[in-house]
Length: 451
Ligand code: TYD
Ligand code: MG
Image (cartoon, rainbow, N blue to C red; front, side):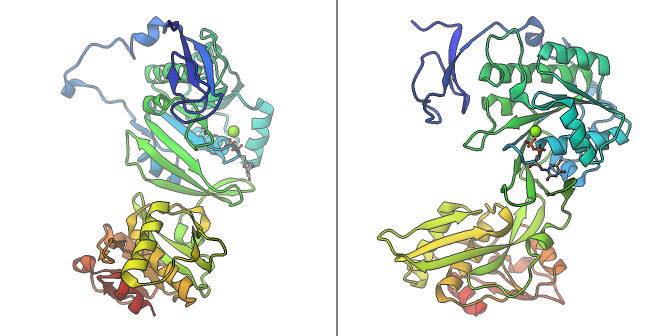
């Protein structure tokens, strides 16, 4: 009989079971199931937020100032206009991506507006944070620092300082001594988050939690952590590149899919206001295999360069490697090229990459990817004045896309001359002085219009 007060939790994905197994049945990781003892939750945690009585909806009182703007536009936008009072925000990302940096910069901006923040660090000493603060020119007197891991002591500090913003860096280093488990274990992480959220709602402060991510790229700890908080942001970016993309994957107070783009400089994260200009900074002639595509990220349009390389395969099974685009869509596009256009591409290795570390997930990128592959295959350059967008169907047809106006505005703003777009969007076209618009209904037509 399994003991009911003992649970085995996977330290990679948070899956738990009453029986020990050598391999996690959820994520497949070996030797990741660790025994954790379950203790009853505190009465106060169970009692909910404020022991309130049910109130009729029109009588619910609004909090005075619902949102606290950080004045870092890229950050405010992904949150839907600032930090909502009483909310909990989780920021996940690989080590060294910039979580602690952005948190300190947010504290500075909040401090300049007269709001007090309490920065609790479980990873670094206050001296190390001070060094980072000097580098970032963070000097606000309204920022209070403490190196602490024990949740009970943290609660005492919160009661003393009465901050408007609580920073926990990181959630995996904190522990509650009442739970017989190491910091970072599933039971610690979920219960501490629960108690911090309770605390922040009770004191009308907001809490920002930094979270480590696992090998699979999800926040370490149980998935329930993401359910507990109001907003989940992921910091993305290639280690070698200076660009960092902050992506909202969950937001109770704003839209998801919104991204904020930053550049890591020698003195902190700088906002990138015109991302397309940065991603296309080298507007020289494009090599064969490169095409400019328009994609939508959240509420704005981005122009990015997608590159393809098609080379004769030296092995029996040709390679297909993609980065920044969806692998399955690329294989579909290759199949369409073979069947509908008759390109004999079978014995070739195909690589597709998006420049600048951006991830393009929408189908509107299909047309540009297909044209880039054809360009590399035929070794014919595409004009660097042309932008592509359109979804590809299995019949080789080009389908209409949404947010046509937003895309065209960005194309015009950056001074491109030609747009190859789906015929399905023809009703959205308005008079444009600077742009030549070529509508296409099939991939074949798009290839003919490109060259
Ligand atoms: P950090 O915020 O400590 O990352 P995290 O908390 O996510 O682990 O960022 C550390 C990296 O950023 C480190 O490689 C140094 C670099 N960095 C800069 O390039 N410029 C800066 O001004 C700062 C503060 C850090
Ligand atoms: Mg850090």
